[in-house]
Image 1: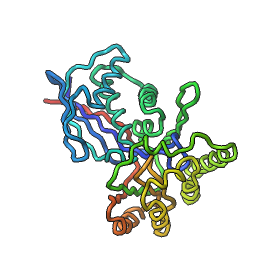
Image 2 (image 1 turned 90 degrees about the horizontal axis):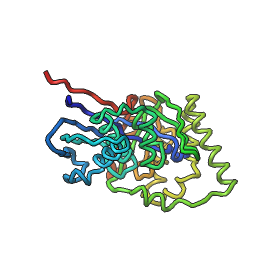
Image 3 (image 1 turned 45 degrees about the vertical axis):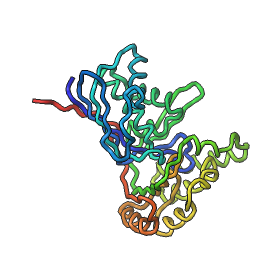
Image 4 (image 1 turned 90 degrees about the vertical axis):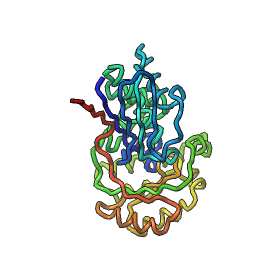
Length: 301
């Protein structure tokens, strides 16, 4: 087996009212460097990752093993060195990136020849929804639908003509906690209004009307009104970003990170301004990753 690497981008889901269905990839990456070995060894080389975890308890290994067994294969022993730019439990798709990493690891070392459709299906089976999974795998912006018969359909957009700014706080928020504050049911009136807003966001993005998209992103009724209380400064961040030129600012995934769309070329200036105000946050101007998950072979001469 030749040495190889797997690189998977971060992702942001929902973008306001696209709840569990709309995601985009961002240029922060989880990377695995894989070599053949006599026994399994997984090494972490990033301050964002926890201390060394026994292989049998490692999330990526467990996903890889599960994927291999799904095809009646056994994982051959490997040494895997893991690095990442993606902060954990911040709403930037760290879990989905790890899931895709495990699926792709099994795909490569077991020669499974999985299709993109199979990878999205396997990832969604694990995550429960396809938004982060599809974005991390395909890159760009992905609009997904998981139907009652467990079928996944999607539209993939290569690019949006916007800058992206993220506001990453120094505390974690588990997805389970963010789910607990959501109502079990919405009335017909609430559902109709919420889905209309979501439809308009997608239509505005497709047509390039980013001002309208930003306006409607901030009017979500599915989850933001309930999760706002979990994020200190939620309303202040949205207002300050808007006053400095952002189209709109919403919670990234389940939070606590928030994300803005801004006019092309203005993201860095807005980010610099917001960083001076948000001293307890890491504020960054990012770009939308267009490649998604990538495998690169290392040929040793």
